[in-house]
Image (tube, rainbow, N blue to C red; front, top):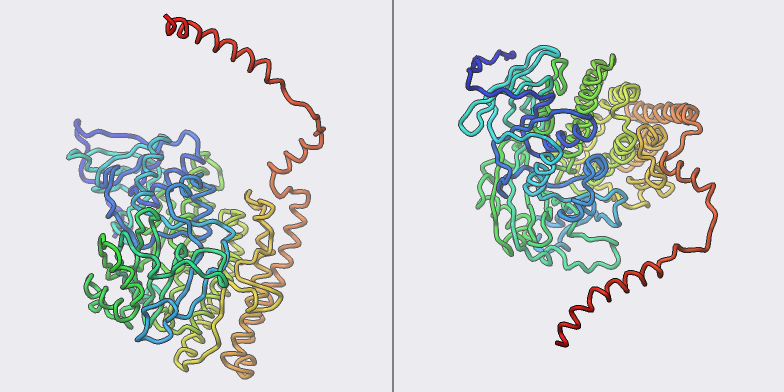
Length: 615
C-alpha cells in the first residue's frame, strides 16, 4: 500500500489547527515522546491525539509493566521523573529466574532452582502501574503546553518531504484537521502509519522464527508470603518480591510483577510459543489458571489469595517495521514500531532509544541543520538494527526456556552484552552519535553470525539434555578475575559521566568482548569438550571476539587522546574550580537581634487581646 491523499476536503465548518508535531497515541511511548520534545526543543507546538479520555480507566493495559536500566535512566534523568516514580510506583530489584526441580512439584519456592538478584541494583529501576503512569504523564504534558485531543484518527496524509501533513481526527462527534510537518505514530497495534505504508512485518518467517502469544492477569490483595516470607539472610541484601520474577517451563515463561505496594496488586502473565504450547490450551482465564495450578502451583496459590481484576489474552505478540523514521517526516515508535517478547523487560528501553532519536531528528530539522537528513538516515538504521538485536534475544526461546542449565548460560551471555555494551552506550548518548553508529552497525554485522551460531549450539545441548551447571549472571565467581555481568569497565556512575560522549564506551566494549571470549571458551569446553574448542568455526568466532577486543582497545586510546583534559562532569569541575577560593570563616550571620525584634512585635499585637480578656 502507498500513501493516499485524504478525500474529505475541509468544509467551512471543519476546524483546522496548526502544529509542529502531531503524535497519534497517548500511551507510554506517545506521552514520553511529547514530554521529551517539550524539554529539548524550545517553542515547539505539539499535539497528542488519543480516543481515551484524560481520566482513563485502570483496565487500560499493555503487556509488561517493568523497566530496566536504559528505560529507568530515560524516565528518571531525561524526563525528570525520578521523584514522581519513587513516590508513586514500585521499586524494581533486578530480575530473578526460577526453574522447577520437578514438573509435578511446584507449590513452594523451594521446589525451584533459582538465580537471585542478590544485591541492590546500581541504576534504580521501577515496576510501573501503567494506567496510573499514563494518566499522570498526560496531565504533566498538558501542563507543559502539549494540546490533547480526545478523539480518534480517521486518516493521515503522509505528504512527501517537508510538505505539510494533515491528520483527520473525529473529536466529540466533529471532524477536525491537525496540520504539521512531523507526524508520529505511537498508537500501538492500530498501526495507523504501518497499514498506510505497508510497513509492518509479522509472522515467524520475518521474525527469526518467533511465533508467540501472551496471557496475563492482574490480582489485588495477594498474600505475598505465599511467594516468600521475606526472610532470607544468607542469599540477598534486597527483596525477592520486588524483583521481576521469571518462572520457566517447556515452551513458556511467566512473569510476576508487583505493581502497587498499597493494594498488594501484582501482574502475573505468560509468554508462550505456539509450536510448543498451543494457544487453545491457555487462551481463557480458566485454562490459564488451570495451567498454573498444574505447572506453577505457587503462582496459582498467589492468584487465589487475592481478587482477580481482569484477564487478557493476545494470540499474536511479535512484529516489526520495515522503516521507523522516514525522510517524509513520519515516525513510528513503541508497539507501533516493534515488539517481540516481554522477557528481560526490554520494551520500554527500546522506546527510550527511539524517542531520543526522533527528538534529535526533529530538533535538527527545526534548526535547519544541513546534516539533519543524514542524521535521520543514520538513526533509522541504528534503531532497525537494534530491533534486530532484540529479536535475537528470543530466537528459539520455545526450545530452550525450560532447560535450566542451557537457559542460565544463555541469560549470562545476553547479560554480558547488555551491561557491557548497551547500557554504557546509552549513558554516553553514543546511540545518537553518527560515527559510533557506523561502528555499532559494523560490530553487529559480524556478531550476527556468532549469535546465530551460539543459538544453534544451545539447541544442540538441549537436544542432548546436557548439564553444564547453573550459570549465575549476578555472581562474581563464574568466570575469571571477579567478573560479573553488571560490572562497569568505565566508572561512569561513580564519576557521573552522564553528559554526551563522556562515558568511554570503547573501554566497555573492549572488556566485554574479552570476557565474552572467556565465557565462550568455558562454554565450548563444558558443552563440547576439546573437540568443540578446536572446531574451526568456533575458533573463528573466538578470533572475532579477540579482534574486536584489540580494535576496541585502539578505539579506547584514540578516545582518551581526543578527550584529554575533558572533565568527567562539567558541573563538578566548575564547583571544584570555584572551591579553590574557599576559606573557612568560623562565623555566622546574626539572627538574635531579628528574633528579639519579632518577639517584641508579637507581644505588642497580643496586648489588646489580654486587656479585653481581663475586662
